[in-house]
Image (tube, rainbow, N blue to C red; front, side, top):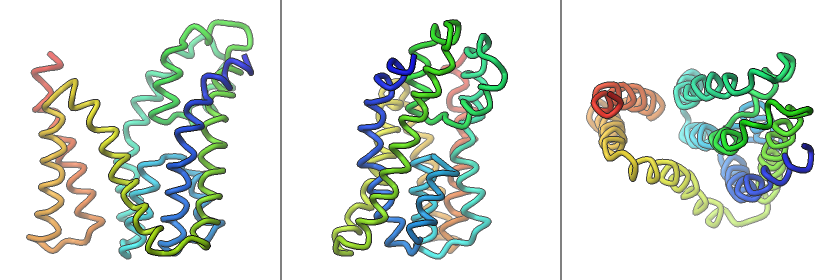
Amino acid sequence: MFRQGFLVGFPIMIGYLPVAVAYGVLAKQAGLSLFELTTMSVLVFAGASQFMAVNMIAVGTGMLEIVIAVFILNFRHFVMSLSFMNRMRPVHLKWKAPLALGLTDETFAVSSLHPEKAAKKQGSLFYVILFLTAYIAWIGGSFLGGILGEIIPERLSQSMGIALYAMFIGLLVPAVKKQWRLALIALMAMLINVICLEGIHMSSGWAIVLGTVIGGASGVFLLKEDDA
């Protein structure tokens, strides 16, 4: 189970490393210390949220706005955890809470492909190693990025900010291909963000929060027909 968990988690590790390095570089350039940016990866372990938080820190957003924005963006983890726990019924209770902390979009998707491991002897070890492989890669990449952020030229590090947009586009495009209404939800969220920033002159942090909440809420109506 140890070997199988590592082999399944290895592709995630390879994918996480360059993104984590980009996060580390951007976080360092945003003013976070090596300890702070690495600790964020240890405690938060959510790539999109960490990129967003670093971007908000860089523009001087308040702490409350950052916390609310990250909470809203990560709210999907409640749903993923419920789905994951439903498949983990054969696993002992002592393993379930630690395993839930290791869920990301990628580890959730990969673990969903191997539900049979939960019923096998030492099956919990498979998921532990899968999640730890991704977790350690993310922390290691963040630390390395923080070190590189002190070495590489600032102009080059600023260009790595495109990683944030690339990550969100990478998450959005496959979903839009399956359901075009998701594009409308994304466009609505962006439009609300622009109106709040340029029209109302709201702070960037609250503009992100409102855009996320209202845009996400619109999905209740736009996707209702498809779900039915």
